[in-house]
Image (cartoon, rainbow, N blue to C red):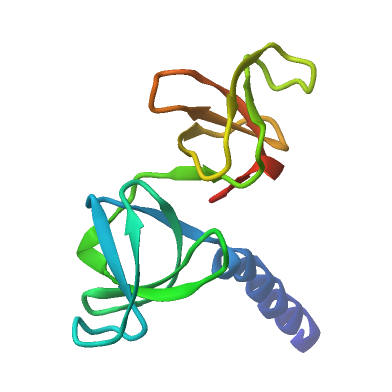
Length: 148
């Protein structure tokens, strides 16, 4: 009886682990946001990050969010400057938006590094369904973007 309880508890803990590891992404929702080295407007200013740039949420405090950018830099941002909108950023020069989720699918657009794309939803493994700001929509390899 005790062994079955231990097993059920262990099973419950394992079921909770993936949600603890789930990554939370947001996008900057102001024209340019200042990033700080601490959660305060009086802290040292590090750099500016432009609108729609995707960031990974690391820690939340009252009114502040510690984020990680596509280059791995950690900084603090005023939480009001983030939106739930999911965007991706191209990390590979020459990335391609394709018409289908196939490596030999028709190429709709070739993208430079650091171009922001809107994430439209789930896709086949290894692919993301995206839209470029110019309206081109299709699929991109997940190895060519950051923010998933």
